[in-house]
Image (tube, rainbow, N blue to C red; front, side, top):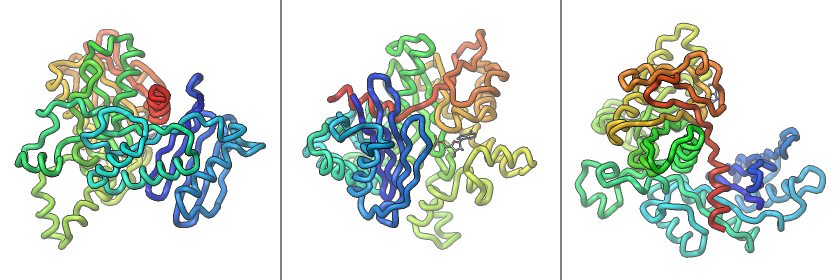
Length: 397
Ligand code: AMP
């Protein structure tokens, strides 16, 4: 079965065509600058990337261009539209309505729309992508896979904030968590890879990418996660601050003469690794280069990042009353040995030790880092959100 996986943003759209039996990616790419001018990137497996500058005023036209590329007689991955058996859509926010993936019926689309005010930048764009696909492929089943769904198993004590309860009742203000597709996929892969029984396990997943979050997964179910009502809470990220004293918002607003939304823009886009380095790069390749050059702010930023990760891991060990395995994943977790080493150094009290030689050699592979005598297994387990969406889609259709 061939599944087209779509991740639709407001002006861009990523896609992969996956053969669900072999789990091979047949073709992948993205549409950029939708509604501005337009650029299509298409890559059939085994061939070079093709980049075409072409008008794409709407998402529907962008998806039509993707379909045309997929069925192109010379470079296409399939012969006709009939070979797309299902479409899996990433949907950012499912609120409390969706605890698992769903087939996208009209009723479901209405319920997703009702979650729009929880993710005003993302959900409307996801819906535009879904509707465009429905128009172009009316007979193909569509599935929605939510970033928030995996975290819906959190208990009240983890998802309620210490705020007036009415805000939860009236506005559903609570912790939702994000990257759920990745946390779900990686926790399962970790149990498989380490020969553990997922239903009897305590796993901490550190999804460290440009956006970063951690989750505590007890017996296969999420019991806590670091992102909150929005993806701003938790770890220090590429450009997001993560946790801070909420009183800072008013303090900075007064000092810098900014509105609340302007301060939030600073917290989302100009903070984290970028902000700590006074507008420096959020990319850890650059941060490591700056550290080598002796840049003091890059050293601080790296230390703040790793310390926060270690603190969250410690708190999730408490939440689960123990831990069997810690998995590092996403761009930084899979590729940055310095982060993994620094984080694990804080965790010696748990009897954790990792093999530094293996750690230094590990880039994006599934690898055990812990030494045989380590009391907790530590591994790098690459995430694959597209494959996770394809698997969910197949399971439902
Ligand atoms: P993600 O959001 O999971 O795609 O992760 C993207 C981030 O991972 C980038 O901003 C970099 O900070 C980091 N990253 C990706 N690849 C590497 C690498 N080879 N070396 C160091 N950092 C990397």
